[in-house]
Image (cartoon, rainbow, N blue to C red; front, top):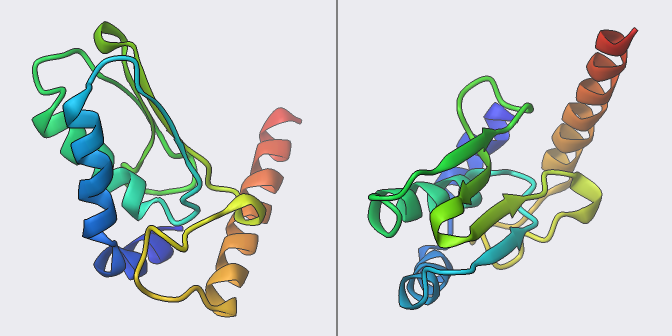
Length: 128
């Protein structure tokens, strides 16, 4: 997942990111946004932009992705503004056609399947 995130970071569609950012900037209260970004790079970049600009004076809670070795935001909560931003990393529900300019190839789908399978197995081992 770290490799996928670093591969897709240069392909983030900033026009779409700023479109979402400007909508939230116009009304920072009561936002409930759910994304289907299985690579996590777009969502992480958006949350960083929101927390550094719009919600910089508010208390923010981050839930970090369990799929990555470094800090990648999986969910962002801003209680004072009643706003929740969440992401979905599961490959079979991923809709990244608007988020990235590069095309999704089968190679990256294999990486996602591998990461999801590895995470499920490690979770099962931990429970045992």
